[in-house]
Image (tube, rainbow, N blue to C red; front, side, top):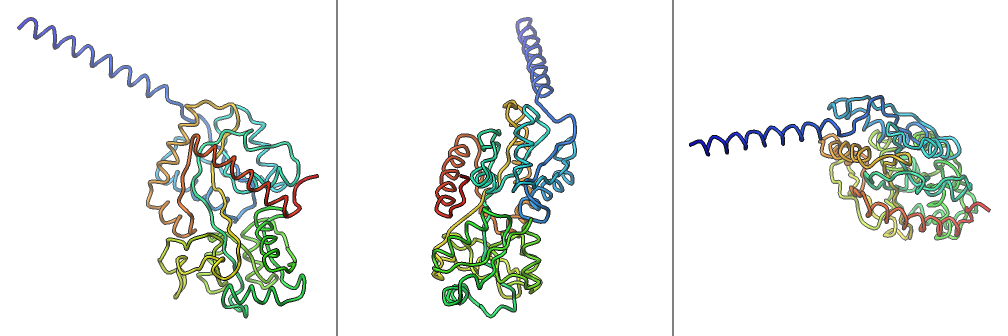
Length: 336
């Protein structure tokens, strides 16, 4: 009996010690001690801005962070302002940045002293699509009709609106020009929201906006979606308009436009942060991606739901940097 009581006491003492260790470990896990600055290296209303503000909202609504997330747009220099701000804030765990293709295109096109390796990669949240859009009153009812008209028209007859110069929208435009054998007039705007509004107003003939940048105008009957620049159809079959879903859009290649392009939506931190600080954000975004609101957001924006972190994300970034170097060299966009 005495032996049993001694064993029980030892077990209780061990349990108390283990509980104390767990409490100590939990207490030592890093959490932000001040507001989190969420940098958007692009203008307001575009895809990156909308995703950042969506995350800001659901994190607050579901109490996923102990500190508020504050979205700050730093779009100067095709996003260089935002990237350099994060790069130069070494060791600051209270700052994150959402990235798009200007992560690659801006340094390649401008020679600005920045590379994605200057930051701390956290996670790929998703891949964003590009859709060929025209005004609902456009005579071009299908992607093939649009492309045939482009090929038959005079040089620079078609005005293509896009976000920035020598960025992803213009890269896609150049690929279309090469496929058609005909130049277009490319008109740059500050953000994807502005681009969609310009097309609604018929100031341009077409755009290659991300789905979420033009979805509300499509739903309202102001714009027409012709095709998606991906190799496969989109896996979203809920109707957006009275007659069409994202899944009804054909891949552009099936209409004779041999162009494919998808864009990163990823999260980075400044250099010099710790693994514990990085893990905090990995855990945070795992909670965000588990929400029903995230599923709805992915559906609304027709995203390709691919999430990567660690070495797999690092490898993907290296491969896509090289892909952009090749595309931009062919387009004549590399800084001299």
